[in-house]
Length: 101
Figure 1 (spheres, rainbow, N blue to C red):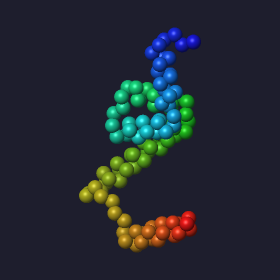
Figure 2: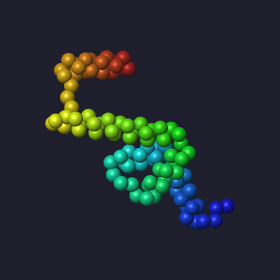
Figure 3: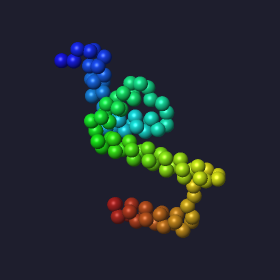
Figure 4: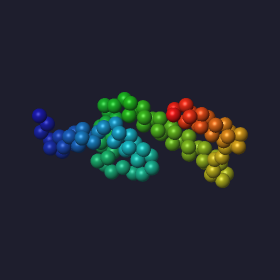
């Protein structure tokens, strides 16, 4: 039995909130804002036991860095696609939608 009430309550809260869905939400939130101590703690407890969310966190951080680099390197901070690529992508999307129906 856990004697320390704070530790026991933290574990109970982490279990109640520690689903992968909640953990991934906290991972994304951390990329954009500051987490409360409780949110940070719940995330850390979940990451300690969940290898999939740990992988998700590292991939999310990598994507965030890539996006920052893409926008940082653009003079006007925009990204655009040439017309030929746009048309090809639209055609591919339309074909996939028609195949799924």
